[in-house]
Amino acid sequence: MSEIDKTQKKDIDWGSLSFSYQHTDYSYACDYKDGAWGVGRLTPDHNIVMSECAGLLHYCQEVFEGLKAYTQKNGDIVCFRPDMNAKRMYDSAERLCMPPFPQDRFVEAVKAVVKANLAWVPPYGSGATLYIRPFMIATGDVIGVKPALEYQFRILVTPVGPYYKGGVTPVKLQVSKFDRAAPHGTGNIKAGLNYAMSLFPSVEAHAKGYADNMFLDPQTRTYVEEAGGANILFVKDDGTLVVPQSFTDSILPSITRRSLVDVAQKYLGLKVEQRPVKFAEIDQFVECGMCGTAAVISPVGEVDSDDKKIVFRDGHVTVGPVMAKLRQTLVDIQQGDHEAPEGWICKIA
Image 1 (cartoon, rainbow, N blue to C red):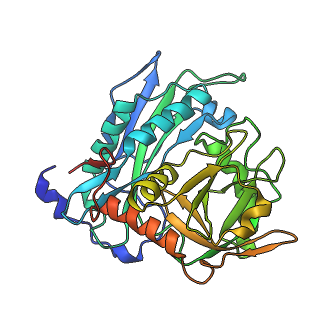
Image 2: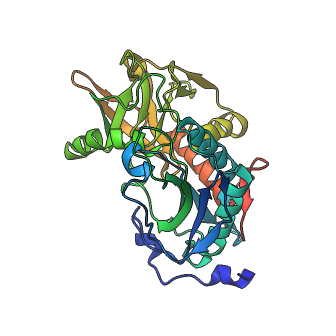
């Protein structure tokens, strides 16, 4: 597509988009057969046809990623650190005995599918983005419990609005009585099976008026892990950013979280503590937030458990000052309004 195509957008009310799926012009697909990945292709067909005995359907061999394409102030179409998504998906696939998709091909596939859908990339300042969902599934027949021999790697894209309807308005979390992941299990990879585990507690939380759950560590249920679809951050009274870590490696290594840590230290001059965080100590923090690709940072004003209600002093009514500055700085980097560290921005068109 030519450079001028960047300005030829679909007739969409970009500011009213929700975080939901709609068909775009093309997806990307590549098949693994006979021990090797084939030649990838762009396809206008958004349907997948597979055997009723496909490994995906019986033994949940599936991994996925999430990233976004943005229109920057100068008109460039870019992605944010797709190489890190490529590495995380590589690691996730290895954990589920799936053939990892080559990391360089992952990035090139992202570029190709975004270029093919430039008309769907929301304009600068609209508040919307093009969400990119790479995923890999087992398509080969498997009846015994073992890895499949055939797979498909795909990427779908769709324009989306904010993940949480309130935007940067503080939300409430409840402490779930369920576990998100097992000790030394698959909590640190991005696999659909982990999210299936969170659906029941998520529906339960929403029915009670909560935006999400706060999950505690599955081994002792005394340490904070993460939310159903995001990592968690805290801020101390002195402005220190506190990032929960896991003894059992069951927290997903969020790319947004790792980027925010760099922003906090190198751009904002904040002290950062990355350590296990006891649930019993969170009432000592003044701010809390959930971070991830979809929301960047969604401020948390309150966390409720059966016998305790924690209200965060500086982030209960409006987003707290540290979370606000962190979020805005990262968004500015992504949209080209702030200088980015080397390698963070991948220009597509």
